[in-house]
Amino acid sequence: MILSEKNALVVEDSPMMRQLIVFALTRIPKMRVTEADDGVDGLRKLATGKFDIILTDINMPIMDGLKLVRRVRLDPTHKDVPIVVITTEASEEDRGRAMALGANAYITKPIVAQVVIAKVRELLKMPETP
Image (cartoon, rainbow, N blue to C red; front, side, top):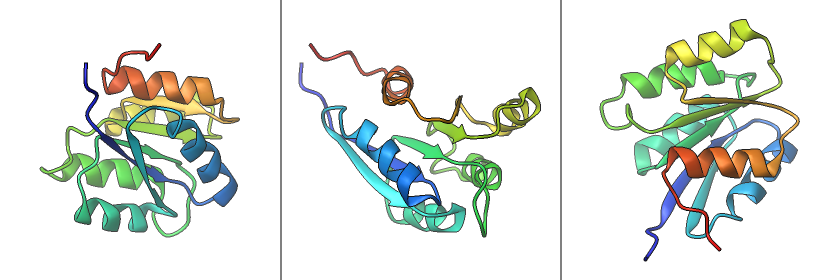
């Protein structure tokens, strides 16, 4: 079976956190990763490319992750792209708000690479590679 290349957009203002997420994603074969450092930068990257999945933080300057989720869901081109929220916000209220806006998954920090990889594979329906 030939795996097609997948494109992920990682929107995270902390360079260290972004690096951890990117490192996890690059362990998935055929995964290309584009980085954005806030919601506005994320929207700019979305306007110039096609992405199979978006991973975003909530707490960011300029435009937070919840506003980004809302904007993506209103955009006919990207409205069906799976969105994973990765955040320090662990309350059920925050989780509920993100999911109500259209996020497909909610992962709380600290980041565990295997959890991120498993969630991305599940949302993109990618089989485990031996």
